Image (tube, rainbow, N blue to C red; front, side, top):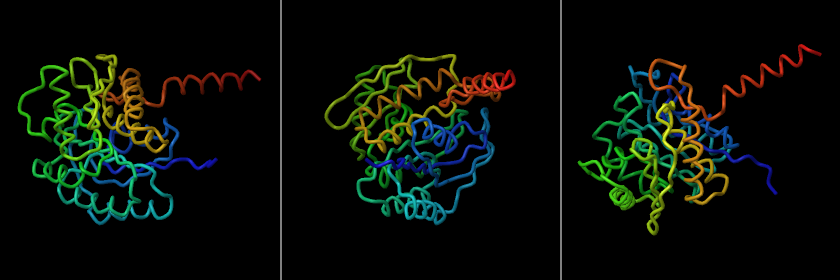
Length: 282
């Protein structure tokens, strides 16, 4: 039996506030017990309330980051997040071509930050569909992102329409789709793999902290695929862990939507204090 820890690559933007992007991805990977690696697509000046600047990484540097980790460490699964512009999408497509055939890819089509800032140029949306969706093992748009991908103007009224939306995204090429429910009235994810529509219900946490929830969800899903789960099982695990991270989110961090907490930081801090107190009593 191999003792090698699975290695998962995040191709995404950097959040200087540490709540979303590659920072959230690395925390989610660690929580799942896999080794996280990164290919940074953009540097953002960002906190919990706003994004004030976005600096794209040169396309050739993105390809180089993927190539160098693959050549030495290996890539057992990929999570793709913020891409920003067409040139970066094209670079990521080239980089995926250099990975072994069959490497699981989770595509989170990041378009808008939790603060409302646009993170994908409108002109790049077609490139996302043409070059990356067809490579995805699982695509994980929220309702708004799914609507943008398939060109729906109206908000879906019920679960049947969300299922139809999932089918529409599936036609663009991914092997499976999860329409995440974090922005719906009922926090139910909808999974579709070309055969069955499966609802993944969950409890809404209106008082939770949700910054980085989508990043966390897609990263957990990618980690589970690297660990050998099938897409539906991975989607169930991602739903559960991302919801718990929102529930336990760090309200006290920042003035905007606080970051999710996938690592149980307050509990770890309490455990450390108790351990220190115990050592002091010896």
